[in-house]
Amino acid sequence: MFSSFRRFLLTLAMLLGGSQAALALDVGPTSVPVKILDVPIDILTTASIDIHTNADKLALEVSAVGDLKGLQDKALEIARRLPFPQDPCARKGANLVVNSIDAAHISPAGTAAVIEVSGHATAWGCAKLLGAKVKTEILSDTVTITIPLELYVPDPQQIALRVGGPVDVKTGNPQTAEAVSAVVGDLNGKLTAAIAKALDSSKARAAVPPIPGLDIHIEEASFAQDQDKLLVKTHLKGSATAEALGALTAMAAKKAAP
Image 1 (tube, rainbow, N blue to C red):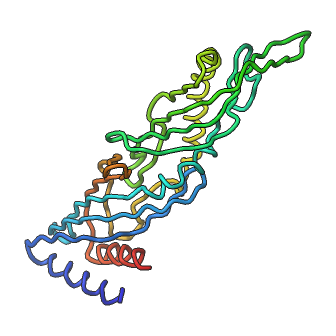
Image 2 (spheres, rainbow, N blue to C red; image 1 turned 90 degrees about the horizontal axis):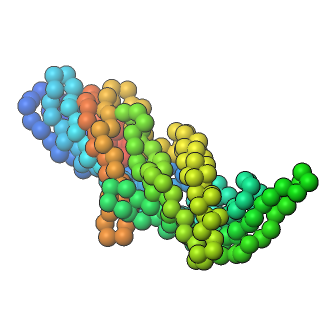
Image 3 (cartoon, helix red, strand yellow; image 1 turned 180 degrees about the vertical axis):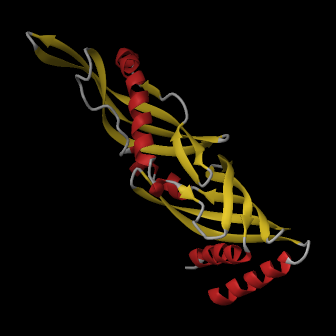
């Protein structure tokens, strides 16, 4: 099936190479596997490819949409791998320790996204007495942590994820405000650095497949939404030989098969 499909696309592409014709081709859904904090995610992607002749190559313009339901479904598993504060004496004075993560949701927010994490925390007071650290439990409380996320293009061949702004921490009791204010700056830095390190891997990035004769680059990538569903939209441009176009579309068709 796939060899005949590929031969058909190659023949069509070769015919296009000898004329001034144009073609719009829809491919997918294709499953694109990535790992976010070592949690495996499948992104179901559909694409529309506009093809025009350009000397001995085919000029391509690609609009792709990825369904991030797999990411949303695993929000809690991902959240539990984030480096929330655990040291009651991380600094002198008040400290907030996140004891448990009980729920997490990833939601669209315009062209960005947010992960909202809720759980339980303990506020501690820490001081030194005769050279030894002495910690005192102030109180336990609920905590909600909101982390903004954004997509970016680290190079023309890859799409990656990063923290997109300050982390917001809220507790249920005003008495924990001091512990929160003391830890927020540190939490921002640690989360940003940890996520950047975890995602600094080809496994955590959606990438253009390395096909000989395919010269295409990512121009734009952003989050979008369909009601409460999180999507990723990308726009790519470039060129391909007829052989490369056939290989690309055959790959998409094969990955989409059950």
